[in-house]
Figure 1 (cartoon, helix red, strand yellow):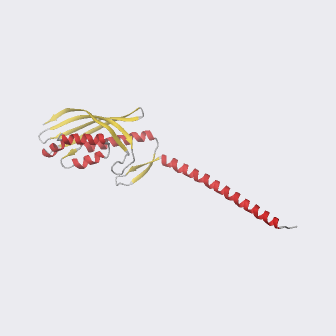
Figure 2 (figure 1 turned 180 degrees about the vertical axis):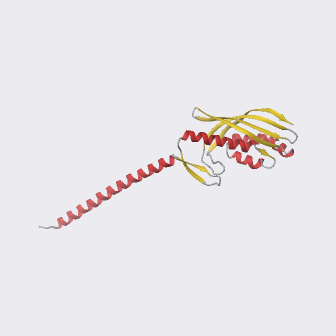
Length: 204
C-alpha cells in the first residue's frame, strides 16, 4: 500500500544520489585542477626565456640549470664590462647608463668615484677612445654564493699614442627578475671591486 511516506523516501533517496554525485564530481574536478596546476608549475620551472636579436622573447627548455646559469653569467659579465669600459666621448653616458642596470650600488659608487676623479671629463677634453680588446671571466661557487673574477684588457687611444691596460675585477652575482632589454639575463653584480690595473704596452 502506498503511503505519503513512500514518496518522501523516494525523494530523499533521489536527493541523496544527486548530492553524492555532486560530491564525487567536485572531488574529481578538484583532483584534476590540482594535477593540472602541478603539471603547469613543473613546465614553468623547466623553461626560461631568451631575447632575440629583434627584441622578441623566446621560450627555451632548460637542459641543465647550472650550465645555463654559467652561460648567462658569462654573457652578463661580458655585457657589463663592455658597457662600462668600452667608452668614448660620444657614447660614455649611454653605455654607463646601460651598465648601471646590470649591478647594484657598488657599480654606482665606482661610477661616481670615477666621475669625481675627472675620468669622464678627461675623456671629453682629450677626445680619448677607450676600447675593450678582451674579457675573460671565471665563475666560482663559494658557500652558496656565486663569485667571479674578470680580466679585462683594453686600450686607450690618445691620438699620438695607444696604451694597453689589464684590469682585474671581482664581485658576486645574484639572481633577480629579468628586465628586457635593460637586464635580459636576470642577474645583478654585487660587491664589485677593481683589484688591479697594470699597463701592458705603449704604441707610438
